[in-house]
Image 1: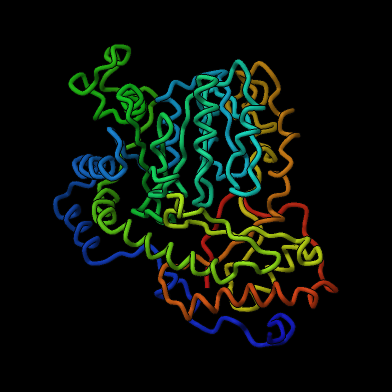
Image 2: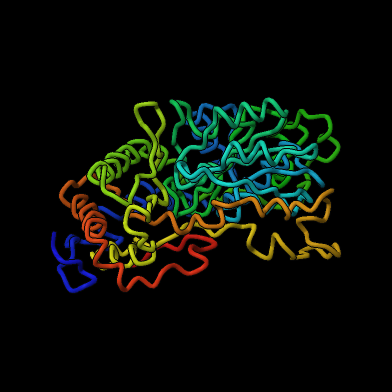
Length: 446
């Protein structure tokens, strides 16, 4: 092995690492998307709903669900999903703490109470054992986030939900098109919601989507912020009929026609493009099989579980196999080899943010998280042991979009080179800071 680049040796990665290179560029847009957008402009139909409805129909067909409902963003689709399943003031909702804030923050606007559960060390998704520990007589639902593209343990989660009569909301923002044991993610729970913004693997612009097989959930979610589609002719739920033609939440959630136009093109090619991504990413991890200190964060595709488009790809770090080398120093050395994306950590745990500790957002005279609670759920946050330290055990890896073996081998060799020469890094290891990660992911620039 060559001397580490951090210590003066040659870089392992010499190929084009720019985000606009064929290996990194995403999303893939062509003249087909451009023409679809121009058609919206030429028809002066930017604020209509026709293309959104058409895209919803295609999306529901692709997902295999009865209903799909488009939104202006993924956060709105989650809020409407919460409302659609009947989450209201004082209801406790169990969710992971190490996620993007949109997965649960809008619960606060409904007066609901987020109760955080710990992560599984293998999947980095919500731990089913901790879900069960956090259930009370006020628990109404579970939010499962297929985090960093990895499916949650849906067999166990659905069994727990059935046992305790709980609703299940799937956040599929990281894993559109992924599968768990052959079944599409987003089709297990009562409802699923997801972001389709430009940084995701299914990228159509600033947009979101909700899917469900329940007409009641669909109609209640639609009533919250789709006033032009909430009419006496489209509504069958008796409790909604007296209020048609007004958004019950006072929101305006309409998906933009340009996003819908892009979506109608992207959905035709998405599965095939994801297949290419998975081929590339699996080859990367195959090359690193058995290398000490690093583990693949991926599914067993032989069981029918897939990583979708492998959004926000990460690896799992095992410092004890590298003499206790800090993840901060490890990532610094990998970056020096030419992998500029390699940074430590993932999302910071939400329970550690003041919003979920002390913030009185709506002037209730108490923390908003506790405004309608019957117990101080912040006490439960003390048990989130892995969530508090997860940043020391995960790191970003390149999101490889094309199967180009010679380039993938360079990226894999960068990680291998650092791991096999870790002893050279121990003497000047500064250790890890107390907090590693970020509240939301930034697109890396090069």
